Length: 157
Image 1 (cartoon, helix red, strand yellow):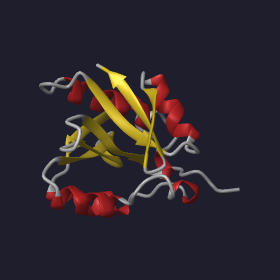
Image 2 (cartoon, rainbow, N blue to C red; image 1 turned 90 degrees about the vertical axis):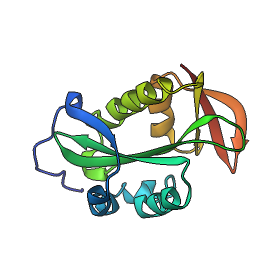
Image 3 (cartoon, rainbow, N blue to C red; image 1 turned 135 degrees about the horizontal axis):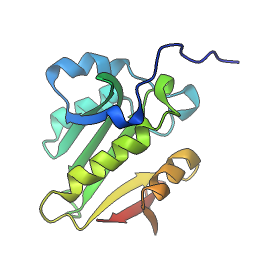
Image 4 (cartoon, one colour; image 1 turned 120 degrees about the vertical axis):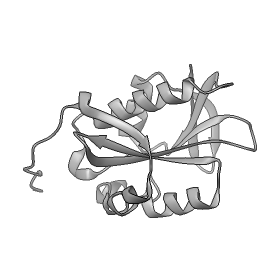
């Protein structure tokens, strides 16, 4: 049985989401999902590299009590003109404390405030049941489409 981290957890109400600064990069690259979740999300290093190469990608640091606990990235997709949540991860040590739900709520608020954003799209692997539950609780619904083996979900904002 894996031992849980003994450090004190910040309340989910202390979660903030900000655009990644150069100083955040090393901390973000050190964050990891649980081993069994690695097939569901790209590494933060790969995601940051993608953001460096694509100006449409906006990488975000998720903090709880000021400490980096996760990463997200969104973009305006040039192919379909939709706002997409491309990445959302919470480090394995910080999962189960409401940080993912709090961050998702903040990201939805951020995106819905952008011009011409009537809905938010995302793709999720069908076997990632925990993520699907999180997204459904936030109001995302399956569209019936799949892209590269991922179920497409949409939230009307």
